Amino acid sequence: TCIDVEAGAAHAVALRSDGSVVCWGLNDFGQCDVPADLGPCIQVAAGALFTIVVKADGTLGCWGGSGPHDVPEFPIPCVQTDGGNTFAVALTDDGVITCWGDNAQGQCDVPEDLGPCLGMASGSFHMVAIQADGTIVCWGANGTGQCDVPADLGPCLQVSSRGTHTVALIGDGVHGDLDGDGSVTGADLGLLLAAWGDCPSCAADLNGDGTVDGGDLGILLGLWTR
Image 1 (cartoon, rainbow, N blue to C red):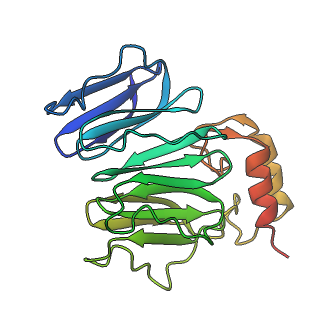
Image 2 (image 1 turned 90 degrees about the vertical axis):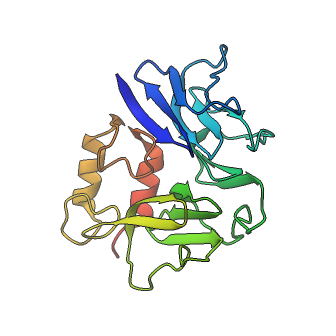
């Protein structure tokens, strides 16, 4: 059973429920040669001609061609990764985003004032991130307006990007408003506590790591309606 799948320029990568990784498609640059000693993974991503994954221990694996193989050392475990044309990005458990590789369009210049993030995505030569308050920040190439975040976008729940466009999922209400009443209050706290523990894809998993825990509690309290 596959639980995650991503596509590069001409290859695909899938993550099975047991943590194993499978690649297929164009393999001229070794992007489909999954390392024999890779070990279980929790997330997969594909750059144009390379594959990058988050392992179960929070470290990264990267293989293929035209890719950012010099993966930085992270003191905090990684929870998400993605690959652009010739650069890569990782999100660590504390909400920090790091980019490395080709920086010709400024796609690796993470804004200094970027706050803790819940998720991110990479286009060919640009980046998009969703901050803890649901606001969207983009940087890098902007030749087709992919970094022109609409002023009236409002809080968002998820972002995605490929090529030269950006997509955001808008929430119906306030980020952290689990009961949908337009505010973050004790009722939402009760719902979060009721979902405590492993809870992949549930609304109370505010940081998207598959578990409702102290990290999500901190986010919810930071969004509390005063």
